[in-house]
Image 1 (cartoon, helix red, strand yellow):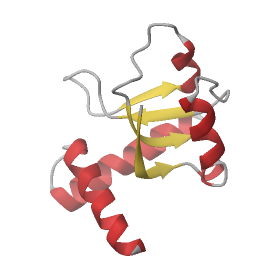
Image 2 (cartoon, helix red, strand yellow):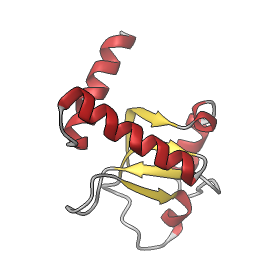
Image 3 (tube, rainbow, N blue to C red):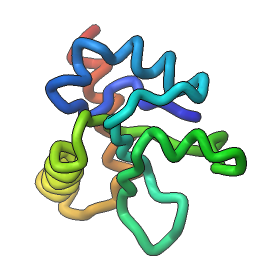
Length: 112
């Protein structure tokens, strides 16, 4: 599982980020938490998955790239829209993988 340093977070996740990452990374997902990930398939831009899905024995988690997290599906959809809007506003496209790379690089500069 790959967690982006600077993720898009729903309001309830911000204060509990460390605990949620710890639990989810150890396959003890928190009920109601949705992860926004880079796509595992070529025909999608982003994916929203309930963290409970990670309990499935054969779910591929090694290459899962998490770019956002929310406490409700509605909030996850809103964050997904925000990510797409930001990508289009700053890059002129929806290449989310490239956008997240740039976003994380810029966030590191802002916090340095």
